[in-house]
Structures are given as C-alpha cells and as structure tokens.
Length: 131
Image (cartoon, rainbow, N blue to C red):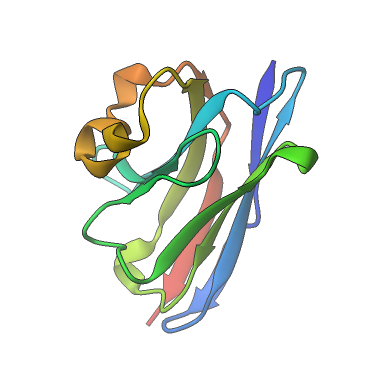
C-alpha cells in the first residue's frame, strides 16, 4: 500500500505546476484524498482535499482561488493544479488518504484537513517557487 506524489519542481513566481498522487496496491475509489505541505522550519499544514466522488472539495484560505484539486478514479490518481504560485508556496507537498465515510457537507469545513484522520501518506515532492 503506497501513495506516490510527483510533479514538483522549481518554478518562477506566477507560474504553475501540477502535482499527481498515485496509489499503488490499493484503490482510491473509496478514499478521500488530501494534499498537505511543510515548509522549512514550519509545521505541516493542510492545503486541499477531495471526497470520493470529487463533488466536494476544501481549500485552505492561503491557496483558495489559485489551487484546484481533482481526481481520476479510473487512473487511481488525484491531482493538484497550482497556479499563480508564490514564494510562500515553497514546501514539500504530501498526499494522504483515508476511507471516506463522511457526507459531502463535511468538506465545507477545515475539519476535512485534520491530519489525524489520514491513514496513508506519500513520500512528498518538493515545490520551490523563486521570486
């Protein structure tokens, strides 16, 4: 059972990157997926999450309007499209998942990014935004 995040890299401020999170050894079909990030010297924080059917999403205020989360269950993959990147977005980005047992309304609040809820974690991919 493994999640693998990829797609990170070095980009100039204002640019875009698309991160991918692929599951190996299990299906993401019934898993809610979250993206988290950890900048140097800071605690890991939640960025965005998506429920099992993709109709409910949540974004941290810091990325709202700039990042878009989506999923393709047929490819067992979840994406995070990051646009209008800022140097403050520099961090290691992680994807994580848990068995989704919540209603769509659950994803209207920050509770959906509660890290203790997430069971499986990927290894992280570095995103560096230069000014």
